[in-house]
Image (tube, rainbow, N blue to C red; front, side, top):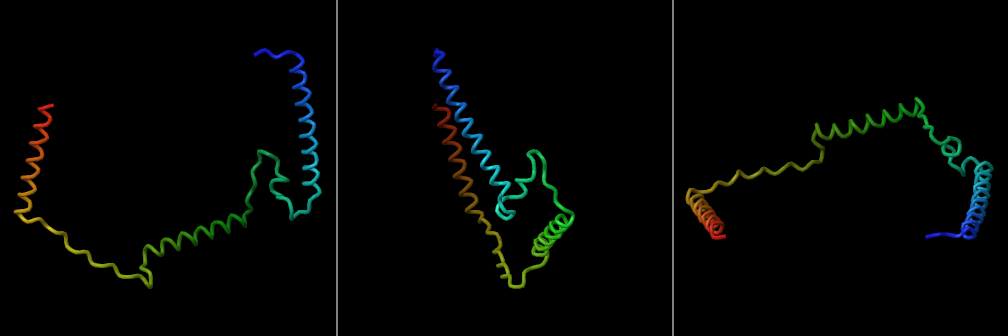
Length: 124
């Protein structure tokens, strides 16, 4: 597709106008961030430049570690000691065993099924 020079120049003018509007909007937003009270804006994102990481204080790390240890202890105490109001588990019934007659009947049925499958494979 070949665009003539007039169309390209008109597009450039339009894009420059859009860029100016975007720049003005950005300027207004930045002014709002700078003039906003401390409780209204997110101080971490407003003061930290892009690409830098926030640091956790030593007290914050200590609180995180203590909370993690507390969670770990709670989980592991539940596993090692039975709960106070736990329902005792039901005794499982002993495993049922096949009688010799039932076992012979199953073996016979299996032989028939294998023979039928082999016959079907040879016929095909």
